[in-house]
Image 1 (cartoon, rainbow, N blue to C red):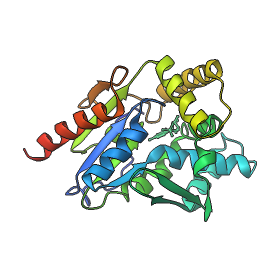
Image 2 (cartoon, rainbow, N blue to C red):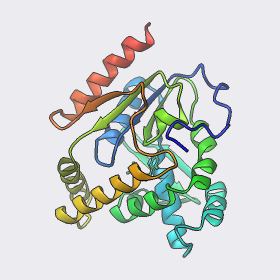
Image 3 (spheres, rainbow, N blue to C red):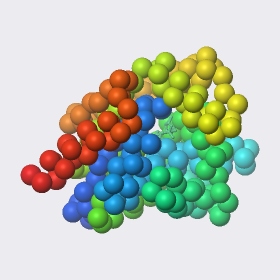
Length: 239
Ligand code: C5P
């Protein structure tokens, strides 16, 4: 199994709908950048990490072992998850009707997400759910395998990177701003651990698509990253 595996679902149905795929590790800025680009373009937005986070959280809450492939795949199939775009800058996440956005952002939920995300049966269940987000006028999709597996025919594929130290710092500030308790050395350790698990897994590992443009965000502000991607996309779509 490699990162470019298609699980056999249809991808041609929506091929007329442009997709901007933004992949990268935790804290690379893809969520913030993706949401801003979606607002600027007037496109839909898919935070695929939130699907894995919601599943990990739901499984933990129901005392399901995070390596039980069959039960987790069933939970993924039945999970009722909705994203409500608030004001172009944030998304409300509803899991079985209850708001879970805040709890899903914690490092603990990230860890559960990365555990359930390594299971092939789970990824297979979530594949079509993700492709269903592809609707006119376009979709900005962020995650780990948007360009490699979920939308291999995306109009533009971006892979964002930044050093683990910087990503941990960004996450630290984000958590503090939201009033969560955070510890920088521990966050760095967790980010390294999650990077290692996401990159080493057999099913859709974290890696840039062969045709992705790699953008190191270490020395760039959010608006610089947004502007850069926007111009490349505009040029690509006008070709
Ligand atoms: O992007 P975010 O940090 O919210 O993702 C949480 C976890 O979900 C990641 O560490 C990864 O294991 C998993 N994930 C994935 N494929 C995606 C998006 C997220 O495996 N497309």
